[in-house]
Image 1: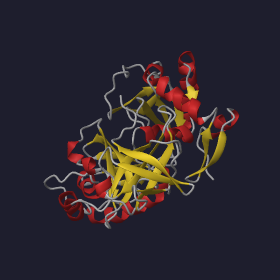
Image 2: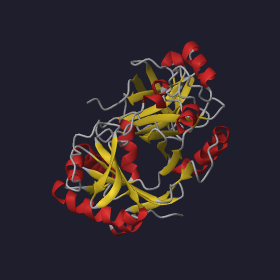
Image 3: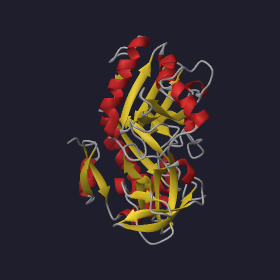
Image 4: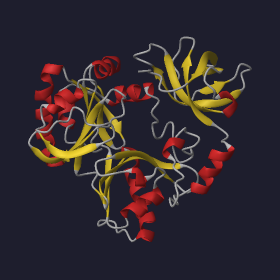
Length: 367
């Protein structure tokens, strides 16, 4: 089991640790609900150093990325980030990723921790046709980079104290390379998976300790809190964000998952599975990922059955929790298309009993 550069700090802080994607990660510190509230109302820091980082470089980088990702890389400019997916050639998703454009021939892909090896192998296999060589134009830097997500309405006030240039108004899904806490060429990215605002910071492993100490010093007056993976999951679910391995995987298409907005059929973009996804967009799909709220007390969990009023199975729960903010059970799941419209009454089978629920539009947390 791997450690991140910050693991010893989590243990010293009394975190409940557990294995996640091969890493020894903090699940919670003071409790999921209190950590969740800290991010929604103030600021919290997540260790996300387990995430993967893969560089794509060279004169064919753009053409390659247009082929292996669903979103239109042509819409990017230097300093812009894009949410995208890697289609697998069988109608499913290898991974959902972020694409950072450094310049016209340099891109950084940020991938899910559990998929680093799978993504790397997929990219290397597809890169052969574009003349991309592993270790050269394709480079897996995942073990060399530390990453912290500072999230919440006060997050950028804290980070600003560590920066010489103005960063508080950094536009969503953009980034800059700048000095942070005396660390040159750190990447500061206005991203995160909480919907609470904030940023993510990338530095080399050798600079991780310097960043950690500076962040906590800067965050002291704002009540910065440690946040574990448990609250990260409840925060992303309140926003209706997909979790790979639960809501999307190698068997789900972006169209089924409601990710048509990152599946761009632009001229000249001959991406993997494009003909299939064009068909799905035109003809419809056999299931749709939807959000639902319980109308009775209960907590939906991954794998629970979803049924109609007659008790017939219509789908299953992919993610579910008791929303710490809304104080109701919420979840996402795949259902037959005729049950996917907001307002449709369904039920979640919990301990062999149907518990009332209603299809709702995500995000669950309305701004």
